[in-house]
Amino acid sequence: LVDIAEEESKRVNKVLMLSYTKAAAEEGASRVNPDRVKASTIHSLAYNALGVTRASIVDGKKLAEFGEICGIPFASMNTGDFELQEGDEYASVLQFARNRLIDPWEAYEYFGNPGQHDRFKMFIDAYPQWKSTYGYIDFDDMLERLPKATCPAYPVVLLDEGQDCSPLQWRAF
Image 1 (cartoon, rainbow, N blue to C red):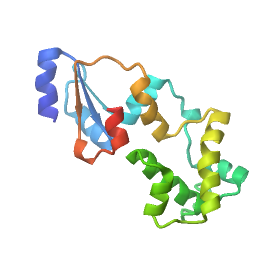
Image 2: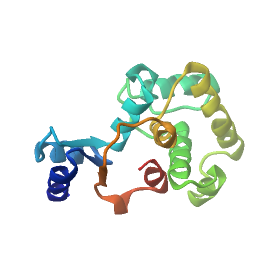
Image 3: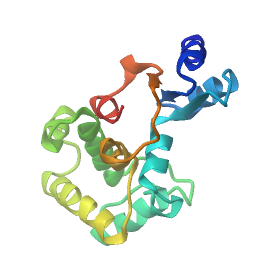
Image 4: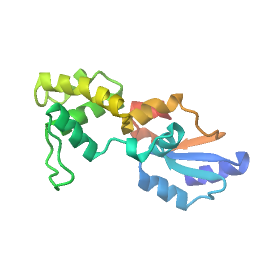
């Protein structure tokens, strides 16, 4: 991919090489001419195109706060307790659904109906409302909003490990 990016950059002068992982983007960046090829993660592109700030991104601390509000526990990153909690399971199911562009209830069934049906419903109803109320955005939101964002123009955009991308990542690409 690096060779293709370098070759294309000679033809069009500016190439964007996207990766899903930070490690792959950093490796790509270390092997190309940065004046002609920009290597980035899809999320980094979305972060910049959407004008997101670090303070608005949902992280472990914010999820724990959300859990306190709605009464659904999440693993506490602050105490070093990394054992998955009910909220972590629900968040994983919702992330799976969003990345595969399927209904959350389909994903819930796929994972064997973890937790309690009524609490999962509360979670999938409350989570988007909570993010909206506080102006928070998660990584899936970034991918969902990227197609509507104004991105820098690149005549050639290459995607690393495209076969491993989810339908949501493909839509963002």
